[in-house]
Image (cartoon, rainbow, N blue to C red; front, side):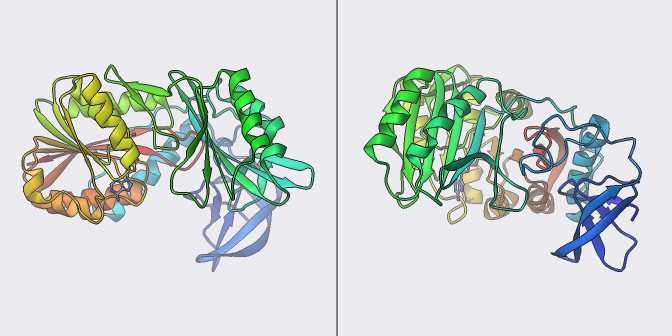
Length: 416
Ligand SMILES: C[S@@+](CC[C@H](N)C(=O)[O-])C[C@H]1O[C@@H](n2cnc3c(N)ncnc32)[C@H](O)[C@@H]1O
């Protein structure tokens, strides 16, 4: 088979068959001997038995786990082919939403080693514990011995956790482990079934001490909130010169570098705005960056712990910020409420902000900065705003999730 295209998940696609074939680890132009395996959507997945020709865009993968680990899907693409593939994913989503595409920027070349926030999984089978990431489209855990995507200071935390995992896991069970590098050290959250015994707590506290971690928390899958196991330093991240105590497990942008670019662009795009609504504000990264340049910001999120952290830091450091804990899907800010703002920052989860976008489309807010890690929902919500009279000014792309199919976008829309 000759591979005709590159799919949204980084696999090759055979187009000229009655039914499409989705071939992992095959690039456009390559001829491969393939074995169809299972049905997928409008076609079949297939495995490469033999690659007869190599694409000029093929490069050697950086990581020994590439191909098994589900974390990266595109390490085999040359940087120019990789960046144009990712940009094309965004262009396709915008075309499908009938949006202009000329304002979509280029993607910078991928930079490894930027992730300060990672979520790993550990699974125990007998005495064997696998610790790493899930295989592509599977619950099988790939035990990782390296990860070039992580920031250098994350790996020692992973290494220190590994020997204590048997104390945390019973046979056949799995745990999620979230690691965030804060200004004051690692913030580790372990999530699993049931409760955590004394031996496991002691093992975690000892590891925290040895690695000089900031905090370790445990969250039972049955509980609503995490509980601290040990807190050695307050885990803090700083935005706009304001330190914020980050609650365990709350959202923070995966890369500090990309976050800094997003914040700088949001400050620039909101120009002379005096009042800004930061919707889906999380721990207040955009809010504090905007407050630092004198804007009056109203931060809204449904996560009560995140909003409490924003309120506490705003009060402590006298920042011009108000906060509101509110579910923006059930109760989006109405057009009338939005009309008191000169600009709105919108940074929803992957599902997007359909209800909030509908209210924005009816509002008079002059500028909307829309941030998203999912082109399809970002385009859908932008189309709602455009139908309501906004003009799409620019779409800036960031490679926050290097070698994955995920792209971070920042859209600027203005009332024309
Ligand atoms: C992509 S994060 C953005 C957070 C923040 N802007 C940042 O850059 O760190 C999405 C945020 O949406 C919040 N969220 C999710 N669903 C929500 C809802 N229905 N209403 C309000 N906030 C919600 C989450 O708590 C999370 O903080």
